[in-house]
Image 1 (cartoon, rainbow, N blue to C red):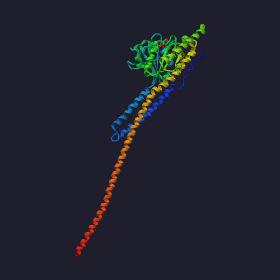
Image 2 (image 1 turned 90 degrees about the horizontal axis):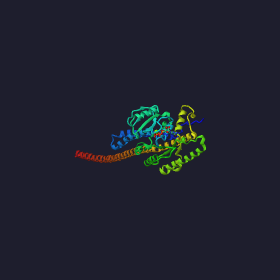
Image 3 (image 1 turned 45 degrees about the vertical axis):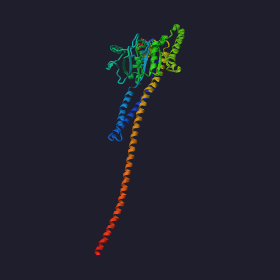
Image 4 (image 1 turned 30 degrees about the vertical axis):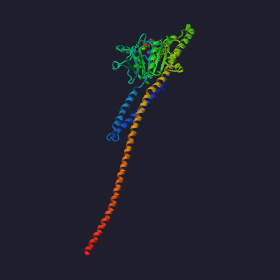
Length: 425
Ligand code: GTP
Ligand code: MG
């Protein structure tokens, strides 16, 4: 009865790998932006001199401005995306609510979720939703209101409704995790459309299965399709409703044995599904991808704790603590997986593009420098030739002057002689 959830989360969460990487790559792109702007300015100054710069080079450099701006915009929107799939009523919406520590998404018996619901952090602390049909912000404060807002919309099951929830209410939202809830995979003939629209950029998939039954063909089919479209998707399997296996005091021993057996069976089948059927991971990793949980209990416990009320006020079945710890274990492994995967798939592409832009600009500048150096060399060569020519003419002039001087001298002497001779005569 004294159980506490021990949910003190700190900033050494594995999600920080993504958060820090995002900050770093953002800073790098600010520097690239400065570099591109400096280059554009410099090239602008040389624009008049079309011997140094070709118009195509000016165009190229100017186009990098738009490219860098484009990447910076995408970077701002980059997040970690997790999508939940499974049969109707397995508890997909409840699992997401448990992770968000709040009843945000509608859940209930029967077919509840009718279209794709994406929960993401809202920057300004407001809670609102926007639909594909209209991007007018509709405020939401409660699940009831959300359900109502969704009822009003004539949405088809593959439509997306984006729910923005205050970031300060949940660390996962603060750290850029985006949740996607889906209708049951058994209620649609449009799996391909679902995959095209909602799955191709997901970093992690969570299959919410029902531990009271077994993995169904509809669920397996969906993941077969996903793994043909994406190479080695990251998939977690949650065996939800594990509280249903709790032993009752009268039949405790027998029921505990049955529970162990059922668990081993689910575990083996799930591992086989990941390893042998989908071939998405090796047996050792697959063991770490299957969890036996109760989303309902976890959500109840977390809500109680947030209200500062003891957890034992809600009816909890035997083995609750173990299931709760397993839920936390899932969250930890999920966080590790999603942040590493998102850094790799999202930032790797951006850093390659950044590298390409910087290299191309450098090449252009090198070519310009090379060209100006050649021009300088040519000019010096010409200068030298002219100088040599001037020198030559000067020498010739000196020689000529000397010759003329001597000639005049001689003529003068000759004339003098002739004059004096004439005078004498
Ligand atoms: P759809 O949206 O209809 O596809 O269903 P869903 O998969 O989102 O299931 P939802 O979260 O709406 O849960 C269905 C019902 O199962 C609700 O009444 C939940 O309270 C209940 N439920 C969910 N998780 C658990 C669990 O771990 N244990 C038990 N006992 N009930 C659960
Ligand atoms: Mg649902």
